[in-house]
Image 1 (cartoon, rainbow, N blue to C red):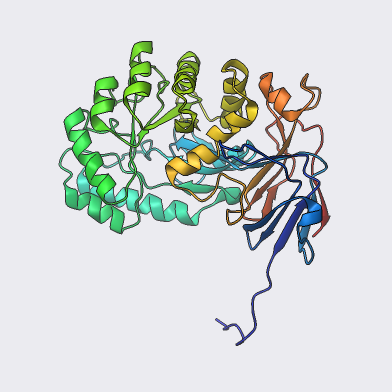
Image 2 (cartoon, rainbow, N blue to C red):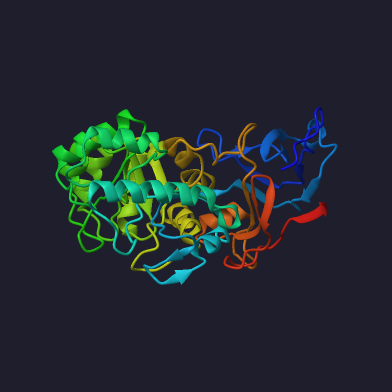
Length: 399
């Protein structure tokens, strides 16, 4: 392979997005930025501000936002990938690319549990996790980044197993409770081993979801002390109200609310977190593919549902699926700020929505329309094939 000539640098890509009507930062502390221009070099944001104050010369790609809204790409905190863009759960191909058309640019695996013949011995489960981590690190349909390789813990695992997994690049566990470890004491020990080596954990919450899973109640969740209380609103069956409230009050861990769960329980979780002044703990997932199918618009639907029925501002609901998740999951995406990846969803109110603005339309329960998706400074798609059509859409003015 030819070497670069000495002293000759690679040509930089320079993206400029101008004429932004509304900029959603993804940051709960300041969800709306008073800015209309974003500049990115080689896929990283270098400037956010007013056009008159931002150096935008030398652009290799210029996008006129046409007054539409710029948001960070959405993060799905709870998916179950298996092999590439195929899921045996619904025998469907292309599901990840379809989620991109729903605004999702990053996914977190809660375990590759739908893999046919999933090994449950220690050697096998470690091998499968490492394989999944490697495969999905190299496979990005539409640019979507899939953080996978999440082993489901089983009896017989020892501390050295978690050390080995971490050394191989595994950074997360699959849902605690989907394997043979279902008691709080054993789960707590293994979660602690994982945490010692930098591996994050999620616990199944609620009734059984697949054959082999079991009821995981509040006592087991509190005893295990996993980093994320997975689908606190059930996946699908939720715990009783008093147990959900207790988890919100007695634990300090992330409260994951999912599309494929109990909507009433989701609203209870949101209301309790709001009363506790702990909205920073709320993150969103779909818990899909699942028995109820594949939901390309699942995260958008959760944002709209929580904003409209949970009585919180739409821009705050967006943070649940962007900056909140990024902070809790230790990702560099999810917020629009200098140094972050130039990964965006460009949205507008859907045509004929009763809302006068995109935020008002979401507040009323409507889904926004996606006009363009950008991942790492590169356009991945223009008008979404899945959302309702956006009233206005960005235009490429220089490429």
